[in-house]
Length: 119
Image: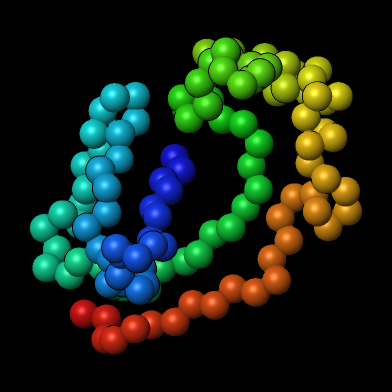
């Protein structure tokens, strides 16, 4: 599941740790439980060690991309047919991916630091 958390703007704190109180997450109209809701630290779960995972992924079958919207060439319910349906439309999507280093994910730098003490 992908969760977008906007932290920029004049009405938001300066950084991720100060922001806290992240939005609820729903999957298939079901509210996912928040195991950190009872934490006294607003920055939870980022108040402890964690791993940063970065990847490039194509498509999904979890409802994130709605069927029949935006030219999506597969249907979520077609688990075994989805990859083939996607590839059959290669002439549609491949030109949108750019060339060389513009294709995929190019990471110039990643900076992570610990602000304050982790409890």
